[in-house]
Amino acid sequence: MLWKKIKQFRKTGLKENLKYTRMPLGRKGEKDRAYPLFAAIGMIMLILTGCSDETQEISDIGITQADNEEYSSDENDSADAQRIEEILSDIYDEAISTNTLGSLDTMRSMVAILGENGYAAVDSENPIDMTQAEQALLFCKAVDEKEAAELRIIAVMEMGIRKFDFKTEDGNVNIVRGYYQYDQNGYLKNRSTVSYPADFWQYTEEGYLIFEGSYFSDESYILTLSDTPEHTMLRILPLDETCREYNRRYILPVGYAQNNLFLCNWSEDDFGDLDFYDLFDRFYPMMHSQPVPYMTDENLRVGAVYQIPGGLFENVIGAYFNMDSETLRSKTTYISELASYEYRPRGFYEAEYPDIAYPEVVGYAENEDGTVTLYINAVYPDGNMSKEFSHTTIIRPSGEDSFQYVSNEIILPEGDYDIWWHSNRLTEEEWKEIYGES
Image 1 (cartoon, rainbow, N blue to C red):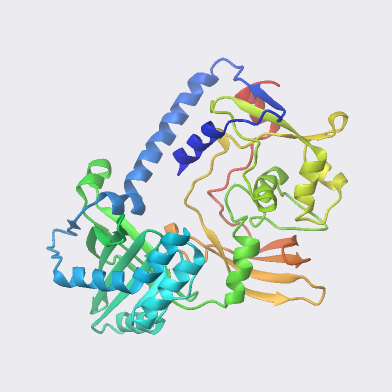
Image 2: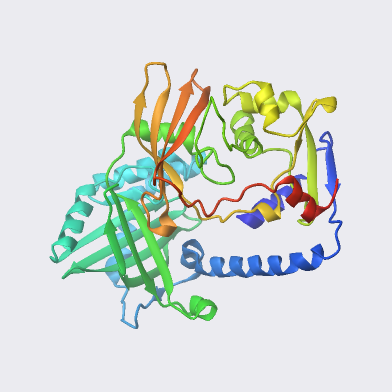
């Protein structure tokens, strides 16, 4: 995904009507200092790529043994996949013809029809209620009571499915996970099947089933000298559809990546530490349905500086905040003689870790003044946490497609909380230290 975006930037180029300045590195020694950082991040990316679930599933063809225990793929596996394929075929064909494969409506239809045919099914990213959820709840109960039981869950993905077969006895759980991908003819083909015992198993009070284990893979072992870890979070308990709609409309478009709208306390009386440049990056696509045109330089060691017309910048920010231009200018770099805002896109040195928490609205209250208070949990799958932190966000709807953010407050945990993935933009001094004087 990262390299796809870089290629897209190179292909698109910079618009001729943008005021743009190239700022080369101007200090001796910066070049030498940059190389170790590039090397370190390159190594991290290599390791992450080698260990990612998606890459592993696509590249591993066939069966992988866990702990040297034999796992046999019998005729039942093929028959099960074929039955699921037949159940989903009409929806898949329609989605292909209308170019809606992977859309929320298509995923919802697939999950629903699997449920009608007796399967516990859910979307792999949890925006849709699980069908036949009572099967999963009964299995979790059997694990707690150390009884023997079996369970199958189908997780629908854009280009296929993941099939989980669980067996439990004496409180231990073994998992067989199959990954099936649609081929060009619309058939579900097995791309990998792995078997492993659950080293971590938890059903949380927020309604998530979390499980984790490791299996042996030749490719991963070469890179890491260890078994391949795999962890999964699936929401079992349903969510109010109004909560899901509030999340899709007001919270997910901004999220927790490369901005701090939901990561700090602020209100209309005191906008606190909000970074309005990051919010411009988020709000511009929401308002104009296209990417921000002010991009980083292709040369990662070159800083880019733009002058954004004051009216444009203020219209974008003002669409989502009730604030005057004087307040906005006091929290940014406004050049009065040019009637513009100085803007520096995030660069290499301001990158953030990609696998982070995502917001989930779990409750709401409609207030007398027309605002709505949203109660939100930060769900972090990579950390096996269904609630890394919680916050309340107040929004003010003002029309069918218009709204403003009113405030945000972190409610859990109390005191300091860790948003380790977040990186602030470079300060003026840091920027000059890296890229040189303007």
